Image 1 (cartoon, helix red, strand yellow):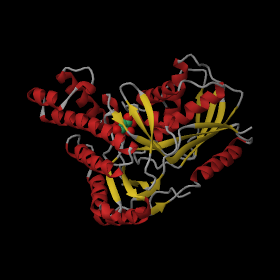
Image 2 (image 1 turned 120 degrees about the vertical axis):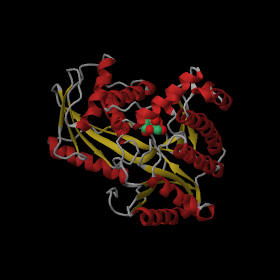
Image 3 (image 1 turned 45 degrees about the vertical axis):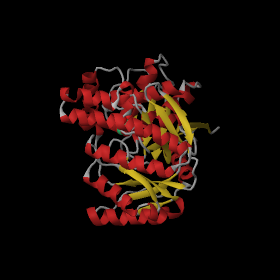
Image 4 (image 1 turned 120 degrees about the horizontal axis):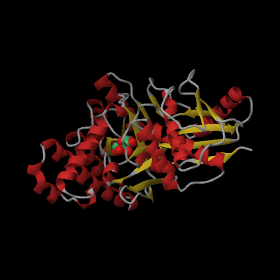
Length: 405
Ligand code: GLA
């Protein structure tokens, strides 16, 4: 596995998943002295297009990537969950499974507490106690949603503990609530939905109004998905994400509509005089991004990846100029890819996720992916002095639980 940050890293990690599971299993035996009963996994994601509109009733188009949280676990016959994370060595967590979960230390376990609280609210409480080891190869702080992956992995483990399967939509919503209430991020539904609903070789079109997830085959298999982590980290709980969400809510209120799906550019132009320039720009992003995402979903279904590239470019510009969630490093990474252009194998590139740092997503011709990654890396290092972490990925399936006995 090849997931340290800090080195130049161009990788193809097909074996990574197997390796991840064996490390989790070994660590479990070392910590708890028995074999685990279950192995669960949940993928992280990259969003192709549809940014900052999942909380605006919009459409989003993410795919689950070959980077996972895995949890090896077994029941322990007590009233507590004993959890160890390889990401936070020396910070084991003990959480009671018969008392109301509250936020606390270690902080990484707040995602766990949030999910457990969701089961409590569903009257699936108390839970049987369990021991667990959490392991991951998702780069932290890279905007690839490791938090949604841990929430969905834990919810999947609890399903195993209880011997039930909850409705997948409710499971994703339970995990979204955990993020909102226990991590303090007023997020939309994208990250948790894709971690639950993803299918191999498909992107997931999520209609965030009806909360329906529709898999769309990546018909053109000659296209590689490249993720480039700028190594600039941003804490979403610091308020800038919440601030953008608030501004969209103000805009919708001024527009006097119930949903962004009922708002046209003409409506916005008409109401322009009633809102500040900033709120107008935020609204313009929402309206245009919803339209671009619908177009991109249709283009992908028809295998027209070049059309998707143009829409990704327009999306980045809108996020940079209207929604103002990009940053210098994201712009440098994306412009580096645009500069390589179609002749060099690049179909499209944009920032992905919440922004203010994190990663970009680039679609490239598979046979040229290696040289695209090298050129992007060289350019970024030259311009910023920072060694990026760049890797190509494939669309994988959603969370899974296996019985190991
Ligand atoms: C974060 C949130 C998502 C979504 C994106 C931006 O990943 O968790 O709900 O809003 O930012 O598109």
